[in-house]
Image 1 (cartoon, rainbow, N blue to C red):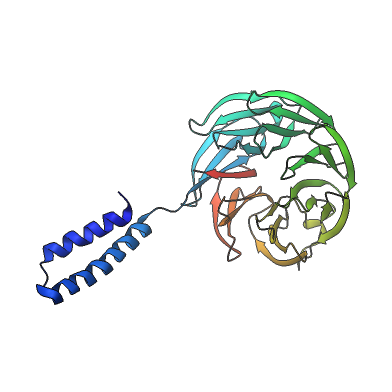
Image 2: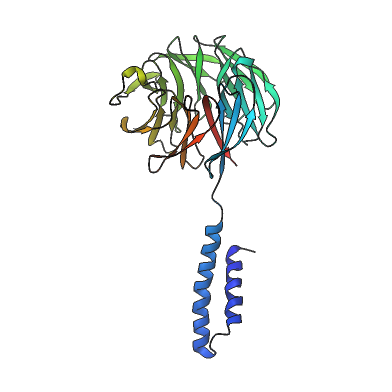
Length: 354
């Protein structure tokens, strides 16, 4: 039975039991009462319906743990012991498995998100650092810092299906919305490598500023953003021409340029606003994507590294590596609403429906 029928039934039974005045006036009064009581009951039922809750997973680089956060309660609810030096993490499309780059174990662990048990491993090169899942969820692309390779892994069969040599110290990973172009950033070569996922060949090497750490596509695929930690910039690249069309620079009163180190990038689904983690500057920059102008700097925890939206984009979570916490940003109001303690040196963060 629908909620509306339940509500009207509730109102009708109470109307009958009240035995309101008889005759036409009585019936009119009862119908009036029935209508409004039904509306109130429906409203009460809708208000009683719980809001969407999501679970966030945070990798704690020095704690060798994953912290799980309930984003409705805004608190940590579980800590799971994993391999050594967990950094990059990625969820499967159905949220049933969490892939964890355990860099000092030279492997990618597979965590069952229901049982919270490690169920296996994905093959990777030495010191896997970051990874990205293809839009169809079938392939995992991993940057292996110590052998200068990007490894391609079949996510279902859990076996390697290819690799691509890239620059020195590969880290940042991104995939175009159509799944055709894979991006890897090499920290020492100072390049963004654009790779054709079908041919597994590099189609362009784009020079950016010093120590590129992360890459992110706009959801329509029209722009690729690459952060440069030492260069202190974000390069905006045209994925069709492979040209840097603009560079975004950051200036924070009272801080030296050396303290402003762009790392993680998150862009809203509508492509209107971007958020950039600025490392030891302890701030997240809010950027108008169309104009590339900085709207605001939000003070968060110490050494903010990576970012993740909740699926409804109500909140943006930031992993703060030195203060050992996660800051929660209310996206609509652009305010930091809470700090959540996690493990030692949080590095990566992802969010999935609960």
